[in-house]
Image (cartoon, rainbow, N blue to C red; front, side, top):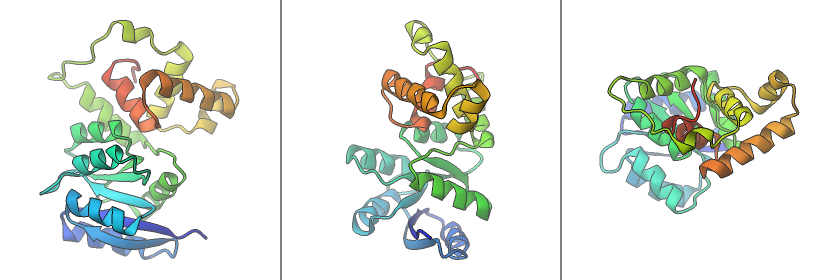
Amino acid sequence: MSNYKILIVDDHFVVREGLKLILETSEQFQVLGEAGNGEEALRLTDELQPDVILMDLNMPVMSGLEAMKQLKDRNNPIPVIILTTYNEDELMIQGLALGAKGYLLKDTNRDNLFRNIESAVRGETLLSADIMQRVITAKERPNDPGPARGEDSSLLSEKEALILQCVARGFKSKEIAFDMGISERTVKAHLTSIYNKLGVDSRSQAVATALERGLINI
């Protein structure tokens, strides 16, 4: 059984301890360290080289988003799963655009926590239906000016847009392939084309960018 090394980053001690206690119920996970802000997270990431970072968004000294930007600028491949609360939808969208591999509410259950970590280590992006609905709702608020449409509207083919909509709803490539009557390899080829067209390199970035530019309508 693989042993995944985790770095927990949150400015609330109780949250860190709660996650640590859950993770320590399984021999599959090892908590390497804890940080209370983004600055500490960057230092410990360089020092410890974890397999996954659980990252809070809103912290003193340096936010989780700023830490993610710096990790991206350094081309650091360590996957980040964002820890979020019910009132951080706009920050979630920014995190998606930065390539977060998943989102967890801070009161998440054990199975969901483990499933997200395992997906992140495999390089997959786990976008649960409830989290994506919150992102979509945030983009549809009345005070949101909405995406600028125009030549962008025809950037993706009809099939690419459909596949990306399925991704945004939390479906995996295998499920999309079955529903559309095509091979999983074809789905992945379409995703590669979508990434190239949008200038992104992950499912989360593709969904965030497509929502921002009005390319998909969920």
